[in-house]
Structures are given as structure tokens and as C-alpha cells.
Image 1 (cartoon, rainbow, N blue to C red):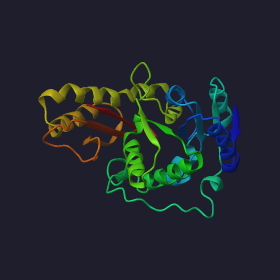
Image 2: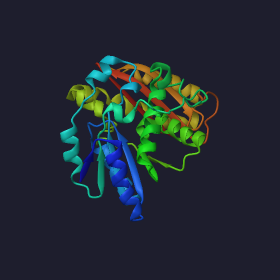
Image 3: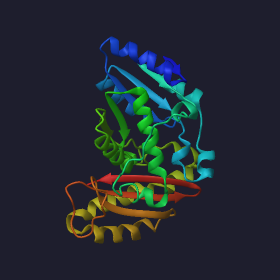
Length: 278
């Protein structure tokens, strides 16, 4: 396994991969890897010959300086976790490698998809996500890129970005990896105590509750009942919305063919998100 810290060294290695006629998969991460990330790597290895895993905590997608400062950074541990895999290239760049002085990135019109849900509560977040993913795609030039569905809105926006830019990268959404109790795996879970992890299960329980309501409630009725259900727990709800999976527009009277419920909540000092498609 090789670890690359510069775009040029990675590009040289990937050129050799392409000369051998091998396909390239890409799993972008911000490190603090867990089984959810590893499941993405496994899927990427099943579908491509070589996989690039990037480890880069992207500063421009944080609208809260304290959140950025507290985000776990553990590169040595991450490299050790990835050592169990073959055919992996690790890209661990500095900010200047991702955002060079001659950065030619141009803002993309996301048609309001970045202004709802996470975008409403984290202004500028998705501009940072699109910028870093766009630049990473230019460096790696993957055939396929793998993203977890836990970050549902991020997946939808990256798919939109690819469509707008006419990119040939295939976006592969991957199912959310959960603990046995149902808690969605997240790097932020490292900051939760055992009691907080138990309290956070109200998120998954609420999503299951909404699923049970779908056959005989409108989205609006289900949303209202779910908020009441959620508030019986200990977490502080930020938002709970039922939206169309493609447009991200909120559903009220009728369920669409691809409806998704998205939840964001605070468990102590830690902000958690989750979703479920119906």
C-alpha cells in the first residue's frame, strides 16, 4: 500500500494503473474511518481494479469553527485500518494540494438543492462539498466514485454536480452501515458516550416509526406524528423533513415514488444526521 501526499505523485501512480488497463474506484473521506467507510472500500474493490481512498478534512465545508477543531484526525490509525486491503492507494493531501493558487473551480448552480435541509442550517456547506469533490475528481479521474447514503443530500448534490458538468464519473450510492442497534455509523460517534449512543437510537426509531405510518398517513401527517414521537427522547431536534429523493422538495399531501425522511439532531454537543428512504 502506498500513501501519496501530493497530486503529482498520485497522478503518476494512477497513470501506471491506466496503462495496465485497470479501472479506478474512488472513496473520498475525511478520515476517522469506521466500518461504514470500510464497506464503501469493499464495494469499490468489487467493482473496480484499484481504489483511491482520500483522507482530507475539508475546512471549507465547515460553517462552525469549533466543529472543525473538534473533528477527529487520526491518519496513522486510518492507514492501519486500510492495510487489510490490497489494491488501495491512499491520498492524504494538504489544503494547498486540494486548493492550489491557480484553482479554476467555478461555482455551480445547484438550483436550490443546497439551500434546504442541511443547507438551511449549515450555510455554505455544500458549496464546500462540491468544490472539494470537483477538485478531487480532477486529480483522481476515477471511473466510479462511492458515497454513503447516510449523507443523503450530499449524494443527491454530487449527482447533480456530475450532471451539470457532464462528468463521466459514475456515482455509486451505498447503503448506510449501522450498528446492531440501528445507530448510523459516523466519525462523530467517537465523541458520544455510551449513554449518548443509547439516547441517539431515537433517530433510527423515529425513522422506523415513519415507515410504519406511510401506508395510512400523508407525509405531512406522518411528519407531525414523528416529531411528537422524537421529542419523547432526549435529543434536541433540528429538523425532520420528508422530501422527494430527486428534487429534495418537501412532500405534504402525497408520497412520491422515492420519498426520504431526513433528520438532524443534537446529542449533547454532537450533531447527528440520518435518513431512510421509503
